[in-house]
Length: 318
Image (cartoon, rainbow, N blue to C red; front, side):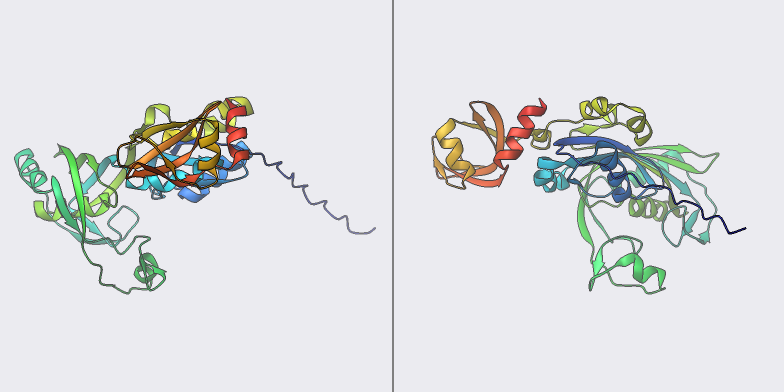
């Protein structure tokens, strides 16, 4: 009797479609930002997707994902301030600065709330940080964590960041520090936890990290991958914010049909506008986002523009 061959499972090809908008994902622990993006892209059957900067695999929380036309403006959100809830474990430093690394040093913890407040005051406002070796920053085309895993220490220039707000609560019994941090782009909370620990004299590493806000986007309107998977397709699409959710604080300029057509062709328009670096441009008939630009010397100068088909598709979706 011959050997029976198992039939391989049939892989169903997902039919992609144009999807435009912003999904606020509550990223789970242990998943990279790109893996989270790919899962959401698959669930939405979207043709094109990108994210507005990465969130560490060991961090959870708000990760704005951009689909379709929204990917053209994703870079604008990289400069947004961030807010985190972090847990710093006192008394231990690790090779990675977080709970994943091996313990480098253990020291006794004799810290009071007064000590914590005195030290935290040193870290509010503009500060300088040396990026951690276990980070995605590049040196000669290689990520720093590649050097770190090979046991190579690379010199990293300090960078200027701003801690807009820092509130700390001490759990002396558990040797834990609960941090609520609002900061500028490029801030490493892992490094902040380590530096606070050093200033307290006992050392520390980052035990947990949750991003609760990025720019105007918060957890209240975020959805988990688990909930997204349980939804119908229409419910998933209903979770998307419009493309111009990425353009808060932009000066709004509206153009009639003739000017709108010329603007979309990359032609500058003249008008009585004040000089402005960040302008969101809309057509009036029908009202639709055309793209971004800036105004200089009474001229509206095109920047990132939607294509006519993207404009038609975004109008049809609403």
